Length: 507
Image 1 (cartoon, rainbow, N blue to C red):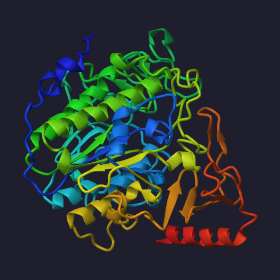
Image 2 (cartoon, one colour; image 1 turned 30 degrees about the vertical axis):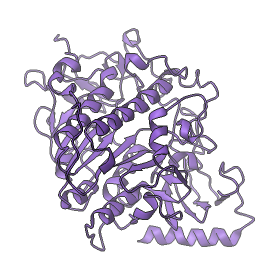
Image 3 (spheres, rainbow, N blue to C red; image 1 turned 180 degrees about the horizontal axis):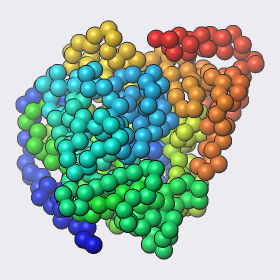
Image 4 (cartoon, one colour; image 1 turned 45 degrees about the vertical axis):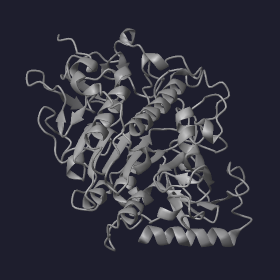
């Protein structure tokens, strides 16, 4: 069997960027925009948001130099639907098939409608995505992984893409650059199957002795082993194309740096999708053991360092004064989401969701209320805002920033909130829909959760989902932890919000 080459060797020509020692001021008047999207990072995971057990100095600096939002949300409590909403400006529950996707799923983002990167392209920007994609590829599940796979990111508005297809715990564990698997070989074809075992690769279930990180009981992360880690799904072939987990984050970083360096003299939009702290958490050696919170904490340190590297590059290139950085997360936190990596055993008093109830998979605030920081050109400095905003608003807000007109039927759930994002307005949205197993709506710091037949508790992940068969109403102004259901006390408020939610459903 061929031995996989290190990514550092495979991609050495592009991984290590020598940054200029002098500054080059960008001549464009339009600001560059970088959206840095973390994965499963909670409201309480950053020291600027109150974390005491971990320090995140680079993100703290970003917050000091910009606006830190305390009432900002992803649309959904899981990754794929949140990313779909961000990309399309449409609530994901309006379209079937926007749940958590397997690694072989077909593309769910329409190619013939407006998208976030298309807004920037209309304004003359160079556009790129680097990092996690997780919105499907191609027109069908069955696909030839050794040939160009289209449609994909390059067909929905990105000039350049360097991604992995789904999540790091799902096969195929390969990178794609502009529709093509990196280092794919015709004599070692890549095959993927989520129903049955294919090929001769060992699985975590059959060969636990080969694992360097074990699956949590019952969570199914014990199929094809790649880099000593069992994955969800089965894979064969692509030996040279498979990544090394410890190198994934730096690979994405250097690809992002490459793009910035190559486009420093024209306006650019970079959608930089980090993998941290999603499972499997396997940070680079320099971060292992540094947080005292297990690999999850170490991954957050790596995330913070990565943001610092981008900040440093922008400063060295003279782009920091003409670049807007938006940082957030696709949903709330989870500790045990598939692997025994020390996140639970070494929690040490850290509260990933801070004062919020729930987390990833939950309709409670911990599921969608996430860190959200905006910094850069035209943004207020050192401000903390409680304005209600959603990531779905970035499409319409970007169009507003760039004077790109949107048709009446385009991105209808996205609101133009430029004054809010830059710190000039403290109100933001009037209302917002949240999505998990059920729907909720928030207005004037009142939150209504619609009845649901879903399980109220997920034992495997230790998550309160918020799914109950009756109406729930919470006064978020006085009860941010959603401890007291006051639906019976305020029936008129329940009726008002229920009607408002039903109106949103029918749009």
